[in-house]
Image (tube, one colour):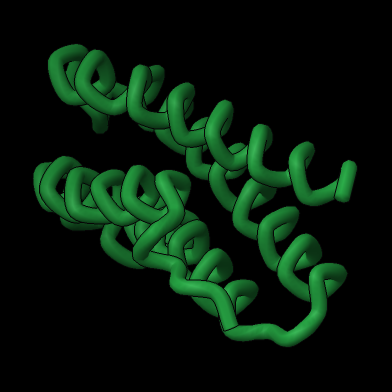
Length: 118
């Protein structure tokens, strides 16, 4: 079994979850069961799938969960862009989140690529 805490992709995605909860707390209350909930679910899905994949016995299962995590990360990236266009997410918060999302995508994609070549 792998230790998810040793993975940079997990660390980064865990940081993003904390930030997401803070920035979405400022979203309009009427979006609580809409975009706010969807964004939070996508954000939590990323580290959750990394953790679940690490708990699997096979390399193929681990890789499958990393792909799911990557998909959730891309979904989150889109949702945050939409939130910014709808003026739910202010420019300062978007500026803070964007480089973290990009770095996490690169790290997670690199991990996936490394595992595919093993």
